[in-house]
Image (cartoon, rainbow, N blue to C red):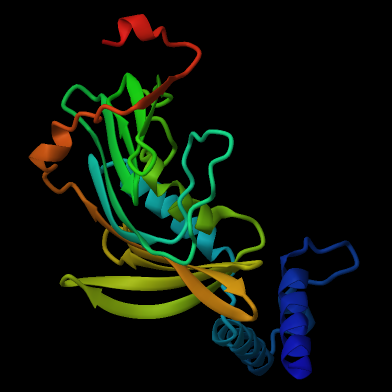
Length: 273
């Protein structure tokens, strides 16, 4: 491990030096090599070996930001996102004093549809376990089936609310743009007849294994892990598909009535019936 770290540190130091602007006392590479073709070939070979070793060690220089940019650009041409899978972490937007946190040893089913209708208005159906969010472009409803509770607030999403266009893609994209991320190439695999390229991102105790459509740059799958007791434990699995027909029951969804209804301060309940 010590040798591995020293080699990696030396290689990164060399690459950093190569990126610095030469001072007056520095000579161009061609001058240093004296025009010797053998020396130039040797220098080029050294650089290639360094880059190959960095790749073998799982280091990708400025890779994740470019993947992030490509994915954001690709999402601009998407009109609907469908996400399915599971998670062990449920984080309600609203809660009441005394609420107990949800059991993280369980897997909760994910079913998310997010789309824009013909006039550009925004819609989102997001069900994770007993929590269902429904955004109709005017009101945001959050139903807690296990507590017979409904929260109603003014939607914060108008037109295209996020750089990525879709709120449900926020965590996936954040896993690519945070600072200090280490990325590892996971190779290629076939998913539903499409070639996908894999990328592992790590930062602290959080890791994501993502698979991206090689042709469109759209995210196809995301698996999240947390480091606990020295082991990576999976806590999320998401499969993402695009521009599928929205199911009729999702389009026509109406939040259920609940025993306890809570309104945000900017809403007058008298006009909500």
